[in-house]
Image (tube, rainbow, N blue to C red; front, side, top):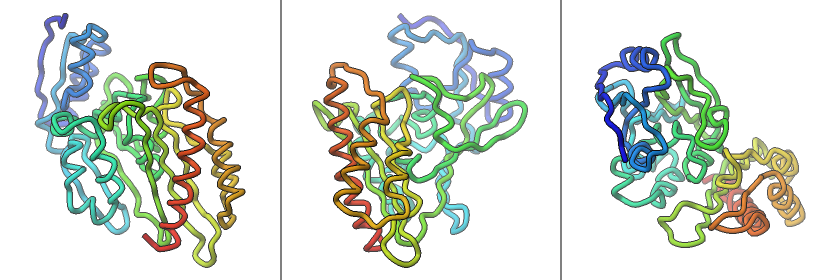
Amino acid sequence: MMKDFEYLEPTTVAEACGLLKQYGGEARVYAGGAYLSIVMKQGLLQPKVLVNVKKIKELKGIHFDSVAGLTLGALVTHHELETAELVRAKFPILCEVERDVANIRVRNVGTVGGNLASGEPLTDLAQVLISLDARVKISGTSGERIIPLEELFVDYYQTSLADDEILMQVMIPPLPARSGIEYIRFSSSSVVDKPCVGVSICISLEPEGRACHAVRIVLGCVAPTPVRARRAEQILEGKPLSLELVEEAASSAAQECSPSSDLRGSEQYKRAIVRTLVRRATSRTYERALKGE
């Protein structure tokens, strides 16, 4: 049963961070509530104070700059990201991914910032953003800091956010020329179910030739946090793609994650899925990069 709580509505980031510091670990940030409302109803989390940040203008909006890239405010909803023409023109992969996030009701209220700040391990967006080399801007009572998104995640439902900190923005740099990105998710039941495995791969090619450059392979839902398959990346780095290299990288990625056996499949089953999806996504990504997509 959900217990009584105090409900506060700051209008600036500084005010919100001040409230979080004042109440310490007894306060939680509330945005769309897609995750928080569920765990509160289940009695898994019982904050005494909810700090509603939905009225803070600094946390809204989608912007693009040719140098800085794409900036997503933490309060951008999944539906806004899915349907934004600016995003479709610059990073269509994000629109494609969002179509498979939960259902339209959740996408209408759930926010990008809330999704990332929850530390949810069974999700789609985090691994795609990490493969795009995204960073996040974080604000607290002691100031602002910017970190690579992959450094935000610590463990199951745990992030590196301090009690008085708020995730403000997600920043995605422009993709280099001759780059490709692919995301493939596998769900063991229905399309709207949480993914069993999600693989996102981004490959840029060297300015001349067919050698891979800046390879990023990110595995989701097969560890407490998204996993960079760095050994698999190194296998492809600096080389033109071949069937042998793809198979070697896929086999390496399957060993670099740490899936647990659950209702969505056994550890062995999930490693096999990782290997298959990495093989498939690598080939597709490389083809896109060759075409300059």
